[in-house]
Each structure stands twice: as structure tokens, then as C-alpha cells.
Amino acid sequence: MSERQDDDRLEELREQKMEELQDRADGQPGEAQEAAQQQAEAQKNAVLRQHLTDEARKRLNTVKMSKPDFGEQVERQVVTLARSGRLQGKIDDEKMKQLLQELKPDSKSFDIQRR
Image (cartoon, rainbow, N blue to C red; front, side):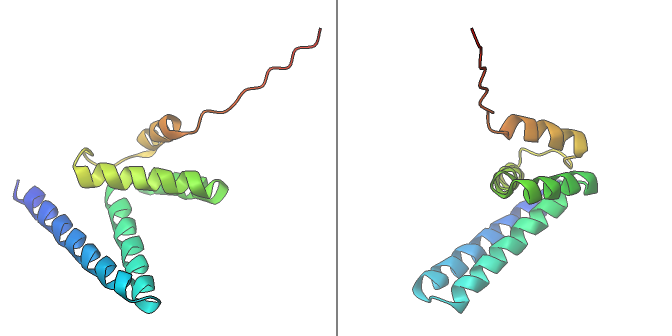
């Protein structure tokens, strides 16, 4: 139970730090904004590393290489689930397949019938 409280506290501190960096970046263009983006990316990667197995991470990276926008959407969803505490344990390859299936955009089907 204490470990969960520590994780929650750590997440709160990260969010506070991100808000501070973003506030500073809003006032200062250039390097500060770039530093804030790098910090946000590092935090996202840390959350993904913590909540995804190696196989799930490989699958997500493959998706990102073929469909970057969709890969980013999946990453945001995983991070959101992790931060809200709705993830129990790590996401393995099977769970990642299910998540990808749920989030994939509806493919438009065109049935052409000749008469």
C-alpha cells in the first residue's frame, strides 16, 4: 500500500514540475519551450516503460513506424490510463493487441457491385 502512495506522490510531483516548466515555457520562447517538450517526452517514455512489457513496447513501436498519428494516440491512451490508476499490472502483448483493436479507426469499406 505504501508503494502505491509513493507512486501517487511521485506522479503528483512530476505533474507539478511539468506545469512549472510549461508556465516558464509560455513566457520564454525557444530553449525553455524545447526543454519542456523534452521533459514531457521523457516522462511519457518513463510511464510507458513502467506499464508496458517488452513485447508490447515493440508492438507499439512497430505501429508508430507505420502509422505515427495512431501510435501517438495509443501512447496517450496508455499514459492516461496509467496516470488515472486504471491499469493493474503491466500491459502485455495480448492486452496491447486488444487496445490497438479498440482504438483503431473504423476502416471504410467500399463495396462495388456491378449490375
